[in-house]
Amino acid sequence: MSSLPNVANVKRKPYVSGMSDAEWKIIEPKLPAHKGFGCPREVDLREIINAIFYVQRTGCQWEMLPHDFPLHQTVYKYFHKWQRKGIWQRIYDELRKEAREKTGRVPDSSVAMADSQSVKTTEKRGKSMVLTVARKLKDVNGTS
Image (cartoon, rainbow, N blue to C red; front, side, top):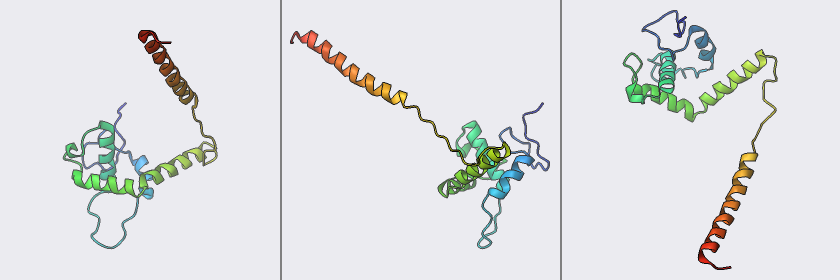
């Protein structure tokens, strides 16, 4: 079984990090639409997303994107713009709500967990270590 995504219209050989047709159907309506004025969009948003996923999956620098993706400046411009405008967070929140509804759960999580034990332990250890060092210094100096 291949780990490559199932893509119907392939312009290039797909990467493992790329989106399948089914994933693209879910993501596409959540992306910002073209405003309708100014220069027409000349890049394929699916290729932009695939390039962003490639960078995130491989950890490569933007400048080291393979040449079959759009220009790295263009890909980074979209990534940074969407991050600045909160589009990534909005998409994530919508997908999480949809996934929770599909499993029959409440769309918004109502429980939050915090581990306070590590905070107490760190604070306690810090105080005891100071006292231990102070005692050792007292013993070394011979003062009481």
